[in-house]
Length: 277
Image (cartoon, rainbow, N blue to C red; front, top):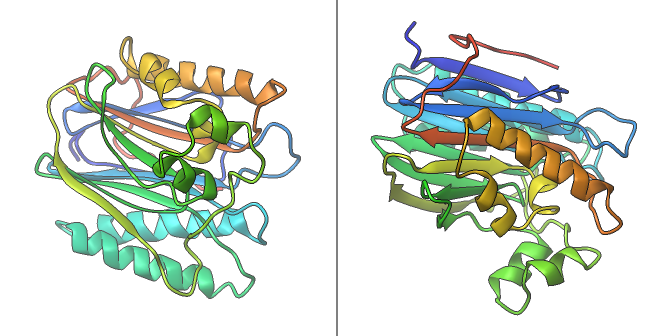
């Protein structure tokens, strides 16, 4: 297997530090851990799969107020990654059909479980996001300028989209994390963003709302522009942790995937890494 073939399934885990893989001639760093304020397991799951031409990046955040949120996020990531990995080549239709199956599997739990989902699908230098809920995907230039972003399907996200409120307004109000849509609903409301062309040195960020509820986009873009990719994610984790501990912070599970194109500074041996809860 070449270094371009990587499969990572990391469900409900506690990583001590970001790990990384070299995919698509770039470096992909990832991290996940539980809410520091609650005595329960991590409800988030992340997944990465890449072959020589295509890649999918996934962040899923189990809905904490529902039963088996951790299992819902695990089902979402595992179903999509395994469906794509068993194909000799996979495309956007493969990903979409896998999301449909994942939704059915979550509903089959019959406990009202749910999960947000953000998938970044890369094919022939084109990026498409598929998302539901408030886990987000952002396409940045190498200088940290936003090129495109998914729709945050929460009350806070839709408030910002209306341009009636800014980040500061939303982060200071209660109830901003109320989800409008998620996996586990009877009917999936998927937001499709793209396809958009990627350039060398572009960066793709996916995260659960543990990041975006505590750092605004200016904070994030300033961090991800310089240094080794793992160090960028470390800074995001540290800044988020500090914000969560503040009086106005929002403690939550935190998951991050950052793909930086045109870099191969991974130090991890990740020909294949598959971890399970």
